[in-house]
Length: 109
Length: 117
Image 1 (cartoon, rainbow over the protein chains, first blue to last red):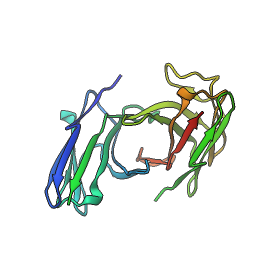
Image 2 (image 1 turned 30 degrees about the vertical axis):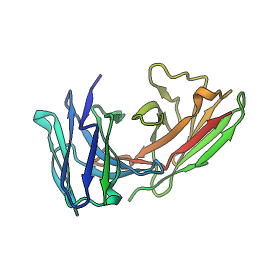
Image 3 (image 1 turned 180 degrees about the vertical axis):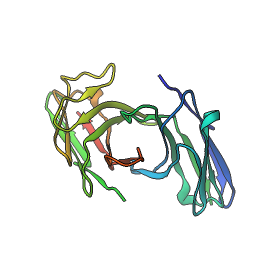
Image 4 (image 1 turned 90 degrees about the horizontal axis):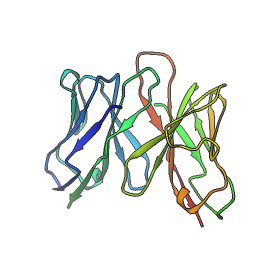
């Protein structure tokens, strides 16, 4: 099956710093989503981005489908950005999402 | 945006009892819903795909007799953990996808934390 790898596994930042999270996947996909899991476990949809570039406030994402990777950029990080960021992909019409192992981000004041 | 709810948010039960978790799509109809399981400090693992009006499709290694899934309507799927044991304690999350259109985006419920004593 398809493999999804995220890096780095952990990241500690000072408030105001920028960061880049990476997601590599091993096969062609028709869905790629980035999520932020908050401390209560809720998955917040950040981006639906099987290809191309999108921006939403301080966050942006780029997926290069031909090279099988996606990047999530967080600029001017805030303490509320702390949590786990997941990348997930689906590769067939069934739509099953396969999750990476996540990046745990901690933003210090 | 699409909203998915789950009930209950937290449940504690005794070993040997059964627990039912509900997943509802609140503002759209979902012919397909998905059930995931997450252990502490780990990623989400897909358990099964729930299809309205037909049997669920289970992932390899998931016991279908233990985790009963019923997709009774276009807005409701239920997961019943039968004869629960402490090792079934976990965070269970459902998701749903709006049918039709070009997007395969999925929306997740807030999760149900199950503790079996």
